[in-house]
Length: 409
Image 1: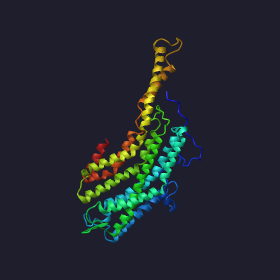
Image 2: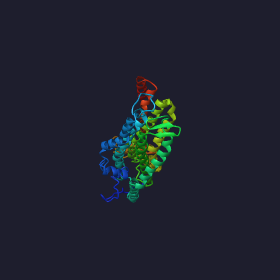
Image 3: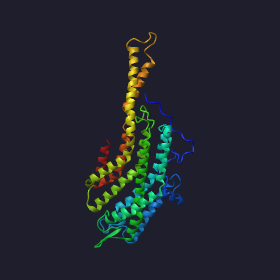
Image 4: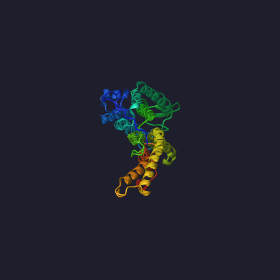
């Protein structure tokens, strides 16, 4: 049998440097405190609608006004330069992807905290590892609130993404509402300066900040996986009591969808203004699905070694117990060792034999990681869903609906 599990870690209420029951790896940092001071958020990331509205207005409304003043806000299809409101990438990025990045903060904050708490309340962290778990939390808190990290992210966005990548590799060739072509290269319009130095940096800062937060989460999981957890091989979730971690993936669904939205925006511009077709992007779409799945699902694999060790040990232990039990059962009920006055019908021995068999079956069917098929499917669907409307560029709506209905049957 397994060694008796060490007593779970407990902490006096309010004594933790950052209470694991309240820990949130998105609830901190300079931008978060700016939102607090400007009344765009409360301490629990409330006021979501106000925050989304203000950020979208700052990044989108000036572009509409400035391009409108220049007569480049709207125009007929195929007009030059490409009008602001017909630039699908700009509209989708500002009005769909950006709000999703902000909405994701509140969802992750609400759903990840109970998962961190479960390590303690579920008895997974032994008392001997309480300090190690606290250190992992404290380390994540320090990174979460790092001023240096967010300043480096801001510098990276302006220096690398804007000055190097965007200025020299715009997504649309030819004249647009934000830049005109000349013999000396691309020249930004008035709206283009706001776009390149306010709107795009704001978006990419929030996106890159999310990558940093994902790094904090993965690092935290890695450190916790190094603790000898109280894995129970017979736990009915078939992952030793770690199945709750699969819920972390669903917490990131708005962030996942935002990436699908970004790719769909790029593809839409290429289709409508570059003469491309949807099948031309099969490889980028496949790469996005694989990368998103690896980033969101891969971190849970850090618990695979512990689960594998627990499974191997339990198979040996429950195998030995089963061998002993069935030998005694055989001696008693098959070889005539049972007392004559003890009835077979209703005997607790039969139920115990069945229970032991169920326990062994649970052990042998332990999963390699705390994942479910439904979680994997949700990641793929969230990534690909924003691309579905692009099917209409290849076939009429009625045919597209028939195709989608056929796929769902």
